[in-house]
Length: 162
Image (cartoon, one colour):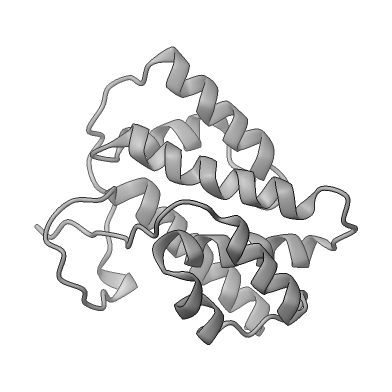
């Protein structure tokens, strides 16, 4: 498996954690074995139409690099404890993604890398993301600009244990 595929896989796992588990529980930080992660239950039978409209916009922004149906997007947020809060995190990522990718000619791989760095940034501060950054398709100055474009406070992924 190539390094890029590993980065994409890690990004997808982070996305899944964000969509599936939401943010709750203690503030203790620990490692979680991805093989132990299971889908959480549907916590919300429905989402409001205004929230669904916001999710449709997220789907549009990320359609090329995270192609999921509206049903898949909606189901992920219905599994969250606080879907509005999760949508707001994705909106912050969408804003940075759009700002960064507009008027740039980027390959598909570079756009996937942009999403991966934004996922990391949504959960960590600028310094920690930059310290571990090993871009393959972006330059170091581009990564620095990208992580600065994410304006929201970091929200570490929280996993609910059974």
